Length: 526
Image 1 (cartoon, rainbow, N blue to C red):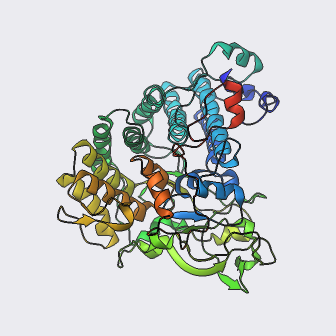
Image 2 (image 1 turned 90 degrees about the horizontal axis):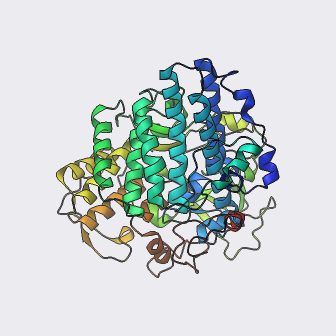
Image 3 (image 1 turned 180 degrees about the vertical axis):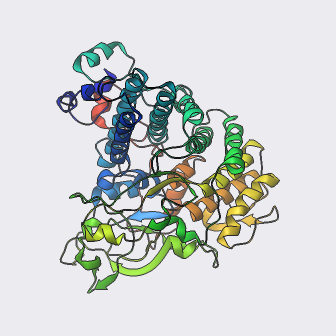
C-alpha cells in the first residue's frame, strides 16, 4: 500500500483527495493547451517540496555546513544547523512529504498523457517533462534520505490503492533508484524535451543533460555506485559546453541574480520560477540583510515583519576565505549590523549566546514589488546554472582520471578568470579552511584538486543549495562539523556549537510515522 503510507498526513487526508476524473484524457487531454494545464500543476507540487514553509532546498543544502548558519530564535530550523533533527522534525518531514506527493503527481500525469488521444510528439514531450520532474524528485530523495521506495503507478482512487497492496513498498537501494528511475527518466527527457523551455523555467533537454550529469557525480561520490558514472558525466558536460546555447558572458557576476535577467539570462539551466503573487503565507525569500538597526532591534524595511524574512547568515571565516579581489565576494555576502531578537520588543532572552550578526547573504536582495504587496518574493530559485557545468566537469575529470588533467584545469580556471582571480596550476597548494586538518596539499594531486574544486564551488555557488551535497560526496560533512568546534575552527562566531554529532547524520531521518507504518529501519544516527 505504498501510495497510502508514504506521507506524513493521515490516510483520511489522502483519501479525501479528489480523483483526477476532471483531468481525464476524454475531457482535457485533447489539445496541447490541455496537456500544458496538466503539466503546469506539477510545479505547484514542486514548490511545496522546495520552498513552502521555508523548510526546503536551501535549508537542507546549506545550513549546518561551513558556509551558513540560521537565525537564533527558531528552534526547528536551528535543529538543522545543530544536526539535531529527528524522525519527528518538521524540515526533513515536509521535504519527504513533498517529494512523494510530487512523484504521485508525475505518475498520474504520465499515465493520463500516455492514454490520451494527443499526437505522438505531444505525448512524448509531455511525458518527458513529467519524467524529468519525477527524476528530480527521486534525485532529491536519495541524496537526502538514501534508500527509498520506488513506485511508478498512478493511484487516484481507494480501489486502485487497495489493488496496490501487493506492490513491494520496501526501501530500495540507491543504485536501484538510479537504474530504474533517475537514469532512464532523464535519458528519455534528453531525447524528447525541447531545447527551449515551454514556459519560463520548465525543463529543457539541456536541463536533463545537466541534471543527469549532476546525478552521476553524486551517485559516484556519495554512494560509490559506479566508477564509470564520472566518465558518463564528462560526456554530458562536454556536450553542454560545446553545443548548448548557454554562455558565461555577463557584464558582472551579480547580474546572474537580478530580476531583470531572469527571462533573458543565458546562464540559468534549471530554475524554480517564482512570481510576485500576493499571499498570506510567509514566502518572502528567506535570507538577506536588513536595512537599519535601532536600539539593538532587528528592523525590517518599511515595517516589514521579521517573520517575512528568515535570515541565514554566512560564517565570517568563510567570507574571509575569498581572495581579496574576487568579484564574487561582495555579491554573495554583505556586511551589516543587526542583533538577533526573540520578539517584537527587541530584547534578547532565552538564548545561550546573544550574538550580533555582521554579515548576511546578499545574492537575493529585496524584491520591492513583492515586499510592497506583502506577497511572494519574485526571485527565481536557481538549481543549476552554467558555471556549475564547468565545475562539475573539472571534478568529474579529476575523479575519472585519478588526478587533474589539462582540461580539468581549463574548466576550473574559466570560472576563476571570470571572478578576477589567478589561474590554478599544478605548482599551487591548497591549505587552511578547506583542507579540514589534512594539511597543505598540491593542487596537482587528486585530493588537492578535489579540494580546490570544492572550494571553488563554495565561492561560486554558495547559498544556492549545493554545499551539503558537495561535502557528502567525499564524506566531509562530519569533518566540517567537528572543525567548527575546534580551537582553529569558527567557535568564536558559531552561535550554537554542534556537540552531539553522530556518524550517519549525513542523511536526514525518515519521518517516524512512515517508518512505523512500513516497518522500515530508520537511517543510521537517529
